[in-house]
Image 1 (cartoon, one colour):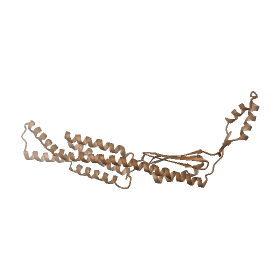
Image 2: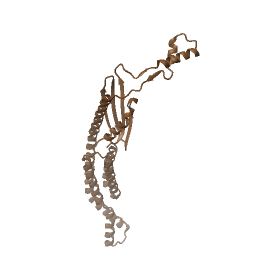
Image 3: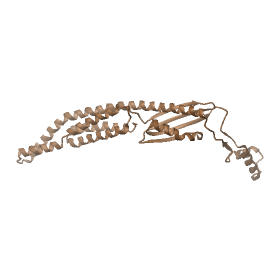
Image 4: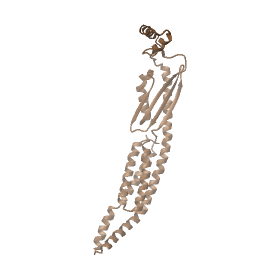
Length: 287
């Protein structure tokens, strides 16, 4: 079953003093493009996070984010009292115009190191809860991808069946085409009012019609269409393989169009190209 590369997953983990929100978003990409945004406290876990995401999501432009929101009294940010007092004393020496201590405090608070952030170590039990939350978000985005993939698969099946129906029309039109080509050549010879060896003419006509023969193209096209449907129904989601098959389908359709030399057949070929182009556009989203 195919999967889309577009997806979204989210989970919320409630800890004793904070709320952790985990989000995963993904769009289509040729390879895996990971962008990880996490609080500084979790930096040592970044490599393992990347490895976990890569093992599950395979391909796509993936954005992974962890947001931490304090819900208790504890905080890692505090005022650097010593630095603030030192700044105020220095400001008083430089400027004696202010009589109000508040003005000195306002100035000191704007200076570097007035606020300090203590490095927070990861608590193993908290990280286990966050890891489980990450797994939940991964399960959500994978389900989202599967659901989107089913929609894409249904669209592919309908369009491939439409191309198969158009291919059957080409088989019917092909007989009319050969008759029309033969009649057109006979008329061209008659307009020349020249004496022609009928046996030689028939030999040349057969050679010409063989060059316009599309039997091989029809057989290969139907084989490629069947192979596309077989691959689509497999357990794996292989967008690249489907893309390659789509290219082969396009090659046979183009060759048929170049050999057609008959307006009704060329019209059908254009319809087939239109259906295939829509398939190719959607294949860019398949994992």
